[in-house]
Length: 309
Ligand code: KMH
Ligand code: ZN
Image 1 (cartoon, helix red, strand yellow):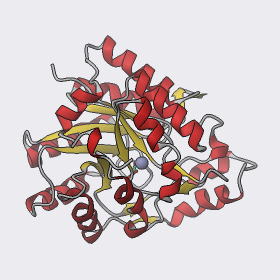
Image 2: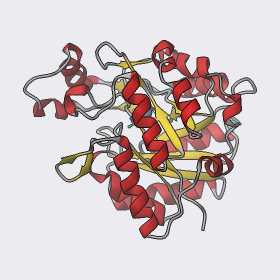
Image 3: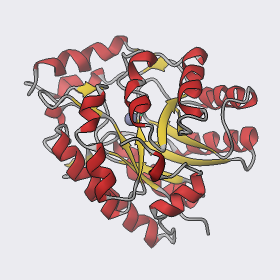
Image 4: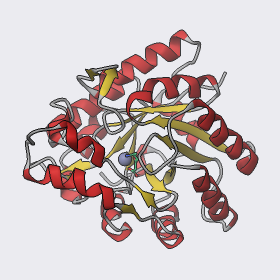
């Protein structure tokens, strides 16, 4: 049976410091939690950066520089730098970290959409940082822009000879699979492509099992055997979607970027706690967990000796 890759998304740009004391927003805690997640079994680390002063999502390469060399030195995990930034940035704003550090992998969001988390705002009476409440509430008006021009820009700048980045194609709805098929037919990407079904974001498809089947069936129809896939169940469905996906031959993504919880009503104390939980579930159900070198083989990444950090 093929091995299962665990990706851990460490901090992201959706959750804010008030929402959990365990969300790593300082470079030291981002590094510590990412290293612990890799030790617990994550073969891929999906990374955003934060401003160390206030924990706000950041695309300043200097903020990535604080932790990337530490991760490379301490783990063999594949480093994946987000090109998603946060949902209000343009692609030109989101590209500098990936262009600076030339990682093995980058996320690539496959369509424009509403991307909202404003309902979370009503859960909090006070906020740790000035920027948080406005950031969360104003997401009601967010358009996360990922046009075909944007997608081509990322593909041209990162996917070519110079950087040879492997993409985590973030597909938030069935239509995004068709966008990807169009781009693939234009010659933008090389097989095997790696799809991330992102389910449960307000603005995208919900995290339900029949939707997972539909995403998988559509991907089979469009891409045949030329693809690998993984799932994010955002929020409460994280572990459920991951365990079912692994039974269907998919890979899984966990991490505090996607859910702050370890069980119903109980916050996760770290990213590694989520990795350990999904690893335990997967091993119990007969999946074998891929090491970083096995993940490199499955995904066809360029190797950690060719990154620039
Ligand atoms: N935050 C996730 C829902 C990206 O970084 O490019 C999607 C994501 C986007 O990971
Ligand atoms: Zn992300």
